[in-house]
Structures are given as structure tokens and as C-alpha cells.
Amino acid sequence: MMKSKPSAHRLIAHSIIKTQPDERGNYFSVESDQLMLIRSIFLNLKAENKSRQIGVLYTKDRRLEVNRNRSRHLFRKNNSYGFNEHIIRTAILFDSVLLKDEFGVFDIPRSVILENGTYLEFMEQGFEKQIFLSLEIIERYKI
Image (cartoon, rainbow, N blue to C red):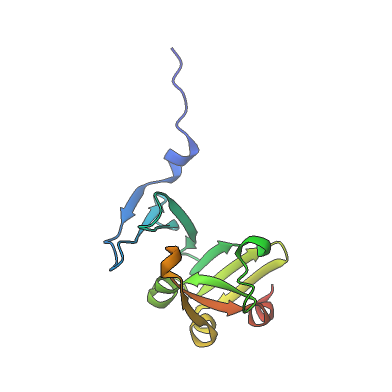
């Protein structure tokens, strides 16, 4: 009988870490590779029964990579993209956010998001606190 190969996910995922819930019952979970160089960050909202990927952290590059679709993710009221406020504010393993959308790739310093972002919270809709950065500022960091 031939043994089947383990799935790629099993080869990549070394550990899954779950954080303590915040004051609203939301928590983060992190899947990392065996060398702890690549970490997928997921947000688990109390209001939802599923997790959402926030981004992929590349510790060697000190960069958080996030993917967006403008028609789906752009906050039209102020023409901006939102980032999880807690992840951006408490980051110690990354210095920039590599934002990818259908119009380009942008390498945005974390400090720029913190200094220029607008804080919004949509608790009634079940979302976490976010910090929004305008496309006008994001466009300056196109690579």
C-alpha cells in the first residue's frame, strides 16, 4: 500500500497560536511555518463564526503583506483602506505593510499609517477597531 504525501499545509504549518480574547471577545490566531519566518494572522470576531485572514507576516523582511480589492474593501466615505488597529499599533515584528490590490503594490511604513490614519470602529456591525489610510497617501508608496 502506497503512503500518500502530506498536504502542503501540513508541511508549512508548524504551530497555531491563539491569543486571549479582547474586551469584546475577539481574538487573533497565528499559523506559522517551521522556522517561524512566515506567519498568517487571522482575526476571529465574536460576532462571526469564522476567522478572517488579516495578512501574512514575513519576519525576515519585517513586513506584513495584505491583499485588498478596491471594489470590496475601499471605504468610500473617505477613500481609504482600513487596517486592524491593534495589529498596527502593537507590532514588534514588522515595520511596513505591503499592500497589494489590482492597481499596484504599495510598501507603506507602519509609522505612516499610525501618524496619518483615521481611527474608526464599527461595533454595531461586529467589526474591530480599524485605522484607515487614504489612497492619496497610499499612492505615495507605490513600488
